[in-house]
Structures are given as C-alpha cells and as structure tokens.
Length: 115
Image (cartoon, rainbow, N blue to C red; front, top):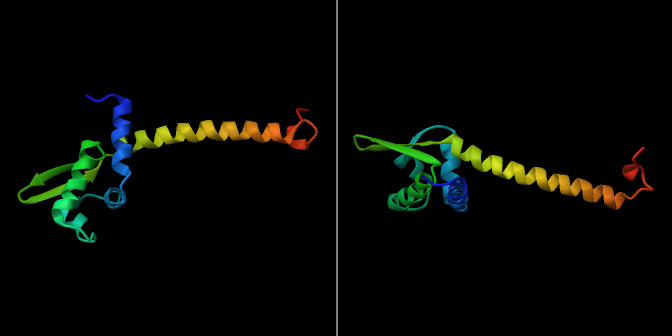
C-alpha cells in the first residue's frame, strides 16, 4: 500500500499530461469505453490505453472489462485527495498574503489600524 505522499505524487504526475487531463475531464461526465475515450483524440488506441494505465496506477481511474469492451470510470475520492492538498496550500498562501498586505498597509492607514 502506498503512503499518502506517494499517492499524491502519482496523482499529480498523472495529471501533469494534457491528454490524461482530457481523459479525466471526459470521465467526470460518466463512464466510457476505451474506444469512446479514444475517438476524439489524434493518437492510436494503444497510446490511449497507455495513458489510461497511468491514470489507473495513480488510482484516478478504474476500469473493468466485460466481453470485449473495457469501461473506465473516475475514482472521485482520489481526485478529492489532490484537491484537499491544493486547498491547504491555497489557504496557507492566502493567509501569508493577507499578513503581507496588512504589513504593507502599515499602522497609519485604515487597513493597518487595529482599533
């Protein structure tokens, strides 16, 4: 089992590619077969399968094969973990920027007054 940091590394590495982000954007709307996912892309089916394997390794996508059709679906909990990490970073930076704004406003300006 991967630890949380390793899992986040896999998620962000997987999402670092525009084709994989496009696949995720499509799957957010609902499950799709590999053929349906490949249809709008200008690459071979084998290349799409490789991208899907990266997404599956990261846990972002899950697939199942029924007969000859492999259907993919999104795993929202994994995306949520990445979103939560980004949210914590955003909160930290917003707090720092607020403190910087207060400092730059100084005590003589209405923004910097403490009364």
